[in-house]
Image (cartoon, rainbow, N blue to C red):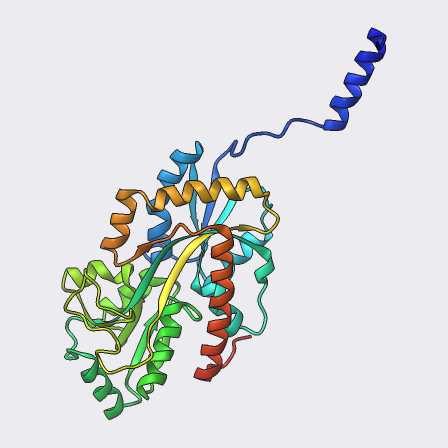
Length: 322
C-alpha cells in the first residue's frame, strides 16, 4: 500500500499529465459566414436554419454576410479561422466547386475545409422581367440571334452557378450575350426588376417571390423534371435546350482540423433541423430539397462537383480568371 503522501503526489501527477478537462462545445456564440449578399439562396437558407440550429446547440448562431469576389472573401475567411467549431461557412457550388475551375489561383484550397452536411439543393430558373416581350425560350433565342450584340444577362457574381448556368445556356443554344455580374443574387434580381439586362438564370429561391407576384416571368427550369411549385414552367429540355440540367447546392463547412466530435455534433443538429417538417416544407416551397447527408457523403459529393465543373468550364471554353 502507498504511503498517504506518496499517494497524493501520484494523484497530483496523474491530474497534471491528464491536463485540464475538455470543455463542452459550444460555450459561446457561433459565427456562420455567408459568402454572399443578403437576399440570395445562400443567405435565405442560412437564416432559415440559424435560430433552430442555435436552439439545438444551446448557443446563438450569428449570421455574418461577407460578400464579394465570387464567394472567395467568405471562403478565405473560413480557411483562416481557428478550427474550433466557432466559425462556419454556408458553402455552396460557387466557392466550393466552380471556383477551382474558373480561377488560376485561389487564396484557399479544398484541403482547407471540413464538410459537415448539405443544407439544401435547388434548381436554377431562367427569368426575364415581366414587362419583356419575351414570352418563352424560343422568343429569347430568336432575339439573341437577330441582335446578338444587344443581349445581356445578369448573375450573382462571376463563378457562381447563375453565371456558369448562363454560360452553359449560351453554349447549348448557340447564342452570344454579355455578362453583367453583381455582388449577390439580391442586387442582381433588383437590377432585373429594373430592366438593367435581358435575362438571368438564378437560383430558384431568390427569384421565386417575384415569379409568384408576377414581376418576373419564368421561362424554364434547369431541373430534369417540372417542379410542383411551377407546374406551367417547362424544363430546359422541354424548351428545346438539351443537356442543361444544373442543381445548385448549399451546405455547412468548417475549417479543416475541426475536432471530429464537433463535426459530428454539428452534423446531427443540422440534419435534424433541415429534415424537420417545418424547415423541409419551407425548402419545398422555395423549390428546394433538404439535405442532411453525412460529412463523408458531403465531402465525396463536393469532390465529384469539383471534377464535374472542371470539365464543364473546359468544354465551354470559359477563360480562367486571375
